[in-house]
Image 1: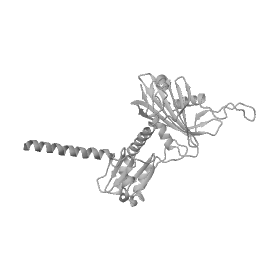
Image 2: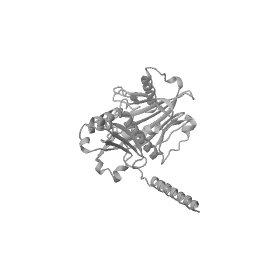
Image 3: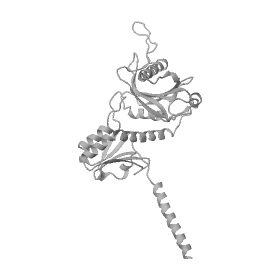
Image 4: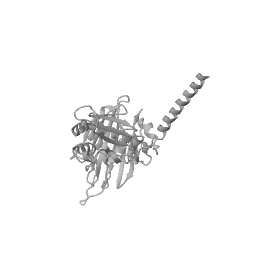
Length: 335
């Protein structure tokens, strides 16, 4: 009987502990905050000195591929003494600790969910600065991935219903139903969404496998491809109008010559891809903006899948709109 009572009591205690654990996990609060806004938890004297300068050099560095300088992230500095309650719920947090060995830790869901908390530690200011500088890419990539996941989550609330994308291109891609179909021509798709003072665009199409050669001229090849697509589909407001001499005006989208496009190799849907960023403009017109193009090598189907996002958004910040387009592109799944 004693053994039976002891067993029942032990079982009860285990179940109680399990309930407490589940309750704790259940009641963790949802994270919040504006897209691309990082909370930096550090003392004021560090923020106002060289440590703060190092943090800003990483988190607030200008984004390549935009017409005007915009910071990678918007930063909110918070002293540790007041870092409590609602302010701990931001999705992305950088915390500076000065009492430990030099290093960096990436933590998940510390104060809210989903959340990424990067802890940079060091005994001296120089230690902290070195850790931040040496881990610049890791810090930026960690926070960008978290913000892309959040953007994808928001878009999933109202998914599009264009089934012909999968039937014609053999792929699925996630974007919100607010995007309208502007053009469908065989295996070419162009979608458009109105935004503040402008519009956001997404286009998808495929090319034969021999259309892009892996050599030193990849950047030139990609420019020629997108310019040919621009000339065919994206006409300017003045196209087909007559100038003062009665000559017909041609106006279409091209890659701006004065702004060298950025090119790098990356991975999309576990497939090799080229990522290109730059500025587009209309010939014989005064419209332009940033673009991001991914050329995905689909070896199984012997083709290249091209997905591009571009913006026309004068007089407003473009960073978050461009993040949305990149999140859409990276959601692609090729059959």
